[in-house]
Length: 156
Image (tube, rainbow, N blue to C red):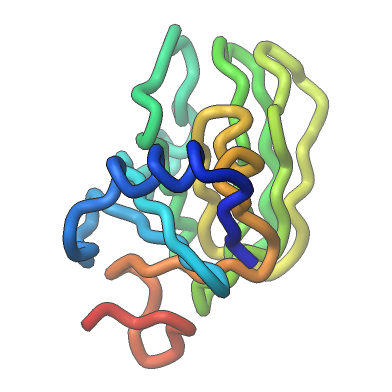
């Protein structure tokens, strides 16, 4: 689940979240037992966008990321070729539950990163953010692309 490890992380997180979480395409919200974290995201939902991903970018704002939507659950395998910044990869099922986290993927590495079977979404965020915010497997994602009739945390 998602937990905050320190008072400074809590302060950082509270500054990143608005007074209410918006359920819009450009925002992903994650929650655990005691807290939540929000990210402004770009969507990669076609073959060309998924192939490009975050390649060739020299930086990314702190609470930003990219949400890959595969339209249906499948095996998700990524690599970091031509990706210049370290990333945390959150592999998320169709209901919006984080199934696996790969932390600090190495820039420019061609080693396959296997997220497993039945993955619908992959959220890429800056390397180290998952640990800093206490994001763990089992955290829940709120986003309008999660099928709302089966979402563990549907949009309101």
